[in-house]
Length: 269
Image 1 (cartoon, rainbow, N blue to C red):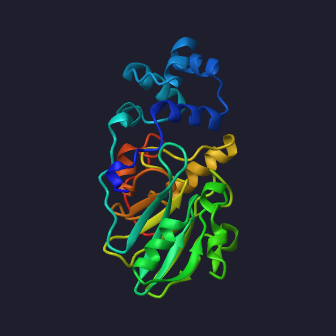
Image 2 (image 1 turned 120 degrees about the vertical axis):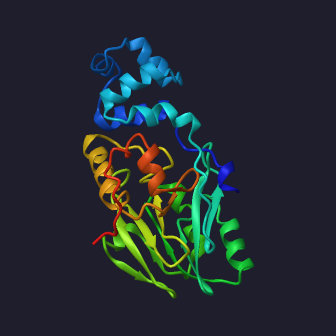
C-alpha cells in the first residue's frame, strides 16, 4: 500500500476525545474551561470542524489550535527509504503497520500486524533471512502473528531499556522508551539507511498519538514522545503503528499534541 493511500489515524474529534480522556476532563468541564456550550463540545466530538470552536477547545486542552484545525488537510508525503518496508494489515479504518528493515541479506521485522502473510512473502521475495522480531508494545494488533515467527529471536518491550543497542548485521538499532500509550513501550531507531528511521509503535501517529488511560499515562506519553522522539534529527522518518509514515519535522509542525516542542533536533546522548 502506497503511503499516500494510507489515511491518517485521527480526526480532530479523536484528538479532542484523547486529550479529554488523558486529562480526565468531562465534556461539561471542558465546555466551562473553553467558554462554550456543552452542545458545542458534543458537536465537535461528533465531527464538527468549526475552526473558531476548535481553537477555543484546543487552548483549553493545551493543544495547538492551528494544527488541530488543519488536521483534515494534513497528508504527509513521506516515502520510505530503500531498505524500509511498511506492511499494512487489516485493523480499523487505517489498518495496522508492521515493518521490515533490510540489513544486507538479513532483515529485522518490527511488530506483526494482524496478518503476517504479506510480511513473510516480502521477506522471502527478497531472499532475506529474518534475524529478529522486535515488538513495540504488547497490544494484540501488533503481536497477533508472533506464532508465525517461531524459531526467530523475539525482543519484547520489557526485554530492553531506553538507550540499549541491538546489534544488526549492518549497524546498530537504538532502543528508545516511548511508554505512555502502553507501558512499557519501545521505539527502534536506525541510522544505516539513506535517512534515519524510527519505528515508534503507537507513541506517535501522523498528526496524533495513541490514546491513554488517564492523566499519569497521558503525561508520560507526552514526556517520552517529546524527549525521545521529537529530539531526533528533523529528517528522521517515523514509522507509526497506524497511518502513513511521517517525519520528526512534520510532527513538530503539524501534530496538535507535540508541535509546541523545541524544534532544535539533536541526537540523543
